[in-house]
Image (spheres, rainbow, N blue to C red):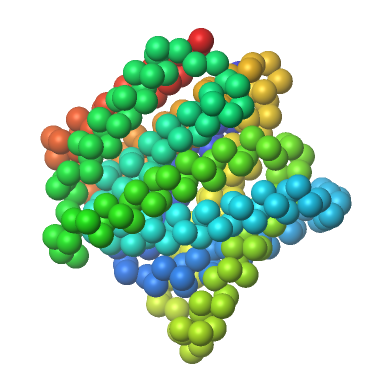
Length: 291
């Protein structure tokens, strides 16, 4: 159990770094599909190299299907998140997206048979309250005050699909994680290519875009692998796999990401956002209470 929790904690830190990288991409107004193209290409290459080094057989239709589902969900999720990042800061966007931990927790209970408790219900309620607080007018950026229905639409899409994507990791065997990432990143890369071909054939990436996108790929790939390992380790000793791992990997990353945003991006928290973040952390405490 301890090893699984440590892997989950490592994933939370890595995802926090990913949040900062995404925030930089959003604030620099990088084209969404350019970021996706580079990031998913680099991720596919990492997965391919690791798959080859570990001598993992390539023909796995089950993982291919999971990779396809994950690729479609993720392309839409990241596109929506990067659009939302143009309007509000990391404290708002990163907290709300990662509070989508409520989605896999509910699915774990209803679909996979994980145990539930009143404490888990309190955690879900606090999650919703946290989202309402953080999703107010706090965090408007210098890009403008366009923080109305458009931002809400984008962040809602990212919230829901990110929660669905996370649940897929439970079905990936620990040793076959690199193969899953190869399928996942490779398919999503292929999904982006047609858009670029028809909309932007003369591709001239902005200065720094390739480096930022590659950094996002490395941190995201590492986070996925750490999450898969954490789920596998915890599943060996507990039936509450999702209820233990998800609040850490998709929950603890909230204060980590916000803190990194304050330290490295010099972003400020107002009172409403601060209270929302604290309620999000309180929600994690309740979600982590054993049944």
